Image (cartoon, rainbow, N blue to C red; front, side, top):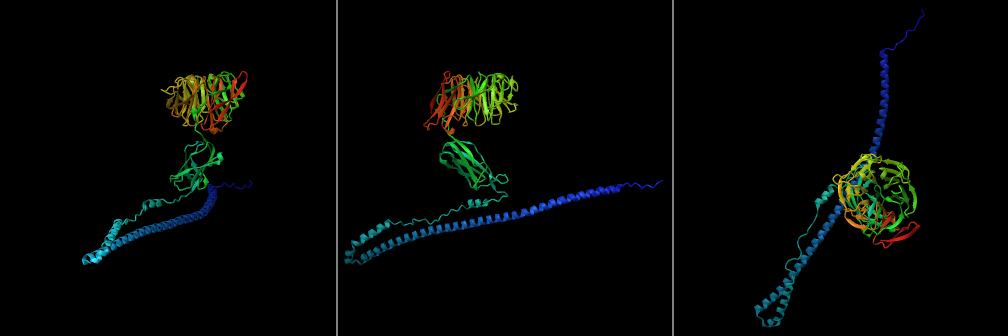
Length: 582
């Protein structure tokens, strides 16, 4: 048989060695990588040690110089106080010396005349008595008269009063200065801000200093400054007063003097804080008692709801024609949105309308739904169907969107207000409980986020918190329907059968009524009407007798008028101008 080489089979021992060698090599590689990382970390640590030492030396120098300056200041103050004390002491001593000299002079004069008089009486020298008989009594009396005008006691006190509030100074010194591992950062420091203020009204701002790490800086002593610059009125500047609370918070108070656009600047140690500078719109207080009677401007068939776009375009729901009409600020018709029907973008008695940005929400009442469209008229989404359960409506008449982007719908036929999210998910139902909602109509939000509901059947406005808790009711109204609230909390409510617009202060007290209306329905604040800047003019838009009405008022001190258009005889196309007096 031919010879064959034996097949060599590796033993388990040699196989184990190979595995072990592999593990050792991998461990060595890993160790080398870790060693390299550690080396780099050590180098980085060493590099960090140098700037830390530099910072320590700088901090030491700052602290040393500060306390050397304190020592110099204390020594100078000590010299000043000692000098003042010496001056007071010298003044007292000089006064006492002069007083003593005056007393001694009087004493010598009296002694002199006394000695002479005694000598004459003892010697009985007739010729001397004859010569001095008239002179001595006269001079002695004159000297005694002088003595009467001299104080026998010093008019200077011996006290030198010293006031040194060492306790308060020591207390201040015990907390004087701060050492932290991160300095205050103006760019990260925050402040409470709003975009709107009122002229002649105190405006308060709270500033919180923060560190470069984004942590609260707990000490005071920073140089915080603020000023309000008018973008008009020749750039007038109102400086702010700053109160340092000593804990890193600063309260700034200022009072805007003029209405209009302003710029607010807040600096900390010469650098702007977060979001500074910023724009601030300063407005005048609205004098609702100056509201005038309305003037008819535009004819529209069955207007009910109204909303104003940021561009100034006016959107009107016309329930009779089942459309939305769009007008410009001058009242000129621009376009029509929708048609009669139940399809997407069609309407059956559209009522309330609300615009946010470029999106509008329409209460499509007889289709028992809310439609969401772009302001250009493109259909986006629909919510609801006929019924009384969740996700259902029975004649929804008004809709608004709150600060949390939730939809609030007055579900009139179901006597409730329904809250939905933007996806149409049912979030909350407000039925008022024992404060039942009877045919709720218009909805409006006050500055606190509470929802005010014009209740047709209860003849009042009911107020609820955002979570549906009843707060209060106000008004004795004749079928309230449309409602709007300004940024100060004043409510404007249309009374359908009261043929008027009623105005309430933030506490719910009626302060004014505009009459001569006929079945007014929707109402909207229009900040862009008139010929004056937004901050100086204001108007209310409502619907009356199928025509658009704009009710304007002016500030009392502004001796001027607002011009609006009046459509008097629509059939003849007659359009005239009208001046409303403020």
